[in-house]
Length: 114
Length: 111
Image 1 (cartoon, rainbow over the protein chains, first blue to last red):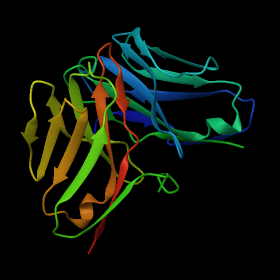
Image 2: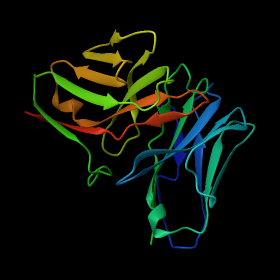
Image 3: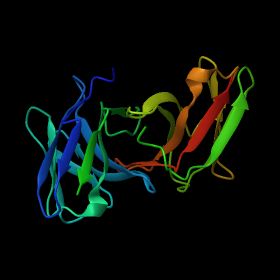
Image 4: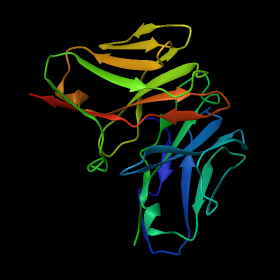
């Protein structure tokens, strides 16, 4: 058990809808990361927060947004969903910004857009 | 599992043999490298890491080698076991808080 909790485990929704994915980092970790894993794309970095502030951005679509709250949990919001957004979404956390310590991953949220 | 269908490079080894998984990284400025193992239905799990001031690091049954000249990273697994079957990812920290993952290699262990 990595200590990173993601909810829900599975999500099925229709095109055009909006969903929120939630992540609780390991106790003591200040950084939270979001990754998307599709069948043909591997693990794609979306965004990273450190102690509530956005620190790095990857190929995150404008339809997607995230935030990290004062209690350090994070939410990833996906809107105007398209079929191509179907994927596994992983959250990870680390003590620092990943500069000197590995990331610890949750078991992901599987999103299916129909 | 959710990785079925991924068109990943595949390595098939006999149980008990040694496995070598290779990775080419992209950024010559990266200074921290990590190997992860992803089993079906789970998130990536940390295996071993190495910093750019080293060229080799050993763990339990695993060794990571770093060649900065050609930007190449390898993971060696000794006496491979069926439980080692998984997808293996290398990752690099490029500074600026980004950790970027390679495409992954699927390891099959034949009993």
